View (cartoon, helix red, strand yellow):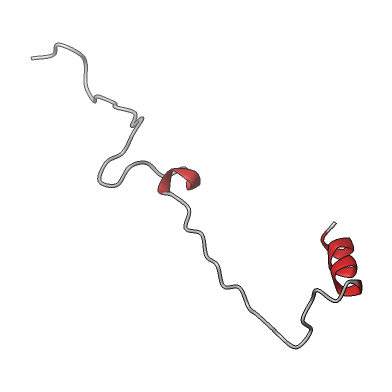
Length: 56
């Protein structure tokens, strides 16, 4: 689709072939998008206890 648009606009003389641009857009992902938990704590941590329950 982009290629067709470029050809159409170029045929209509709407593209300035003398101008060049570089887009350096950077989008930062959130911590949650990588599976990391919130900063400063762990979620869903398994808790294990050693020894028998109620031992004295």
